[in-house]
Structures are given as C-alpha cells and as structure tokens.
Image (tube, helix red, strand yellow):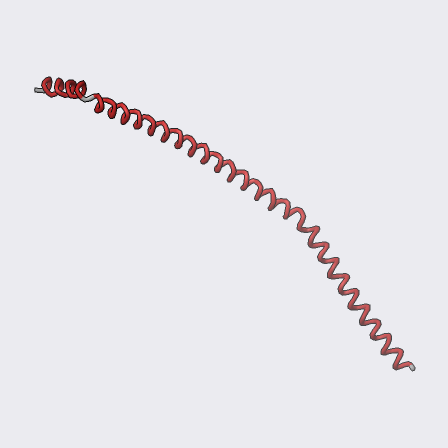
Amino acid sequence: MAKVFESSQVSSKLANPQANHLDLVQTNLAEFKAQEIAKLQNSLQEMKIKVDETNALLLMERENAKKAIEVTSPVIKEAMVLVEDKEKIKRLRMEVDYLKVKLDILIC
C-alpha cells in the first residue's frame, strides 16, 4: 500500500511540474528565512555586546567624575569661604563708616 501511495506521489509530481516548482520555492523561502533569522540573531548579539561595553564605559566615567568632584570639592569650598569673608569685611567697613559719621556728629 505504501509503495502504491509513493508511486502515486511520484507520478503526480511528474504530471504536475507546477507542484514541483512550488515545493522548490517553499524550500528556498524556508532556507532564506532561516538564514535571515540567523543574521538578525547575530546582529542582535553584537548590539547586546556593544550595549554592555557602553554601559561599562559609562559606569567607569561616572566613577571618574565622582572622584574628580571629591578632589576638587575642597578648592570650591575654600573659594566659597573667601567670598563669605569679603562680604563680612564689606559689611564691617560700612558699619565702621557709619559709626565714624555718628561720632563726628556727636563731637561737633
């Protein structure tokens, strides 16, 4: 029975060349799809590797920036102290000038 079925498939393929062509096209499409999927998976893997490398570089840059901030922070704080001292000196000078004027008024 199987031989009869097999021989009928062969004879139907011989009798119908369009069916043979369709089978070939479907096989070619399946192979093409498999190749394209493999290419896309490789591209995706390469992108994942690049993203991981970029994240590692960003982490290193963040750490370097934190260290740079820690190193420069004392200089910035010292500058801020100097600015505060200048403001105090200015206020004290104004107060001394005011007191001089008052003293001059009292003396005269």
